[in-house]
Length: 455
Ligand SMILES: Cc1cc2nc3c(=O)[nH]c(=O)nc-3n(C[C@H](O)[C@H](O)[C@H](O)COP(=O)(O)OP(=O)(O)OC[C@H]3O[C@@H](n4cnc5c(N)ncnc54)[C@H](O)[C@@H]3O)c2cc1C
Image (cartoon, rainbow, N blue to C red; front, side):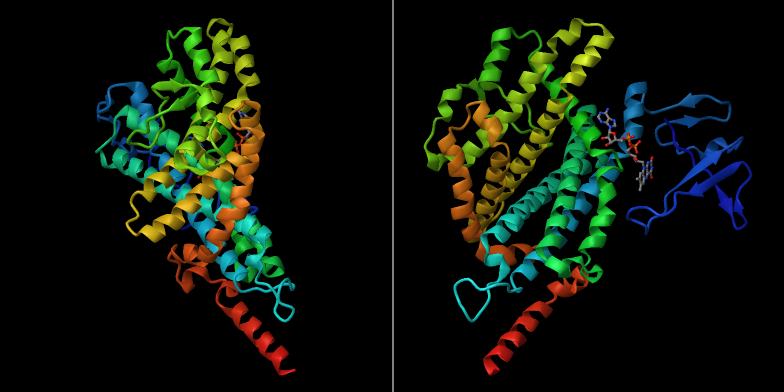
């Protein structure tokens, strides 16, 4: 695959042989035009070839600094990863902005009276409002730290400091996983933030509806999210089969039944299959342990490893089957595969968040961020309680303890810090540009309270 520079028009319109049309109005992102081009008998000079990785000499000889055809193809196509990295960053920023708006508004807007008959409650003091916004805030922090690791991997490859084939493949996998998760999360966060601001959230001036419309296509372009997760899953299976090549059934069964300790995370942030397989029985820990870092890691890692091992063992017959039967078997496991890829990317986000905690020098700040990381980890586990219960990783009692811990401990602890946590995103008023997050609501509430007192 090679890229050419092709002039398509001059002041009078399309050049001879070139045609095209605009795609028309889209569901969002109309600030960017999309269209189609077609070429018929268009000739361009060979010097229009973007020739960093492949060139054609005057005598027609082809040359390339990359000898392997396969490597050349992946180097060329690899430049496309930049789009996915950028989309991941944009999705993180949009999520931060949505939460900045919703949490600011939620801290000022008053609705209904609970304790004080004279003064209505601030809506962020309602548990349900905290449940809607704070776990999403935790996810946004996790996505943000994960994006930093993606940028580091991206820099490694594109600066040339770490650009082996393996580095490039790691970058591809990380970008595919993070882009899929963050763009989906951004849509969910924008919608929940919009609803959390009630009718005011629906006003165009408060930006949430337009941002959501613009970000909608992020789930599709630069690679459809579902297809990207399939790419991640294939990589997980590939790594797994390399690791357990020639392993006997008992080793594999041991991994399926067991769980992993001491899994390693390499420089790129990609998680490798673990070296050691420990006994499932050791998860039998006290309720208090459910919240500790190592337990979260063990539960999250164990799920990924078990899912991959289970799928791999179901796919084993494919190695000796006809192409048709192998494809059918793969398809029969596709849904689980994609779920495993999602679980893997979530684990990487959790690891990125956890690694970032170590770099926070201020102890009280670290404590608050650790609660937020716990909220992220426990919310991930809570979402998959059925899996953990079915696989005997959590008892029913411990499963209940997770939800109780979120509702009774983490949300009340984090509530007083919610404004600081969105303040730390560093948006200035000219970035936010949403009247409901400008302090206007606070002023309106104070005026209403003053008027009531005067009556
Ligand atoms: C606004 C916009 C701008 C774009 N800009 C560019 C651009 O600049 N350059 C460019 O090259 N492209 C561009 N694209 C194209 C974009 O990359 C593709 O639309 C995208 O990759 C999805 O491909 P598709 O539309 O063919 O969807 P399809 O592949 O037809 O997918 C449709 C649905 O089927 C599902 N599906 C597909 N395959 C599988 C499978 N194997 N298993 C399970 N489910 C599957 C998908 O998950 C998806 O939900 C743009 C698209 C849009 C909307």
